[in-house]
Image (cartoon, rainbow, N blue to C red; front, top):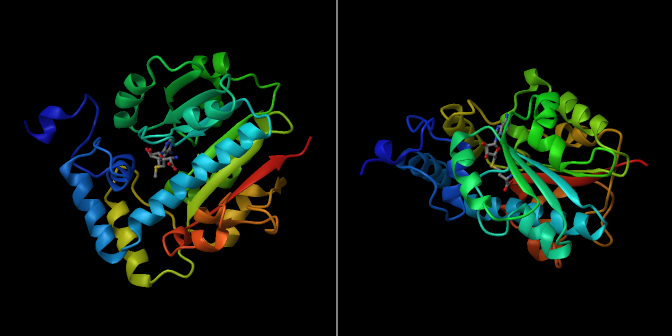
Length: 276
Ligand SMILES: C[S@@+](CC[C@H](N)C(=O)[O-])C[C@H]1O[C@@H](n2cnc3c(N)ncnc32)[C@H](O)[C@@H]1O
């Protein structure tokens, strides 16, 4: 059967999709030939691609576990991607079985698989929504039913804001989400950076993603990523670390020096708290 015959309704396989490419890089099966080719083109100039993806995925999982340990019981995971092993609800519910997770993504392939994969897991919901529309996303019925906006929540924007161009003001959008959430809520965010990376690899990443369904990837500076945490209290990434951004692999790592790999340095991240 061809890829076209296998694709769920609404899934465009004439262009690579960042969600499906990410799935392929992490060893998943929810991807098509066009995604695999695009990912391999990136890998040819960026040998650390898989390490970078896992370092980012590790940040998501470690930050969710840490947030659950701080008492956070509800999570909003936007740009959730295709569920792979140890998703947000599994990481959170391993600490707090009553934790609830609202997943959102704008990729139809994610929607097609998330609903099946989340069937039977309690305290979860998936909605198709765009990050750039906070009021619309948080106003959806499933969001209102699952999230208690009077209590702190963890907002997860992991490897998603770099698909949003500066012209769409992702910083302002993040501020709108945080203003809707209760004091004591947290933002966990990671984003790809070009700092310290070879120009050729950065150019290839941008060229490949410019032909993808999201249109582009915005490779940002540390200062631009830091701006997402304006008004929030950044927590140290690991014991003894300053309260500032870290590379994705280092956040919450048992051995931050060992985790400071070349792949990890493709992404900055932090967890910031909205003051009570
Ligand atoms: C690289 S994956 C990250 C998945 C997961 N957050 C992680 O870090 O492991 C990026 C995801 O963001 C989604 N995405 C990109 N732009 C988006 C937007 N404007 N609104 C919602 N989701 C978006 C893509 O469909 C994809 O699933």
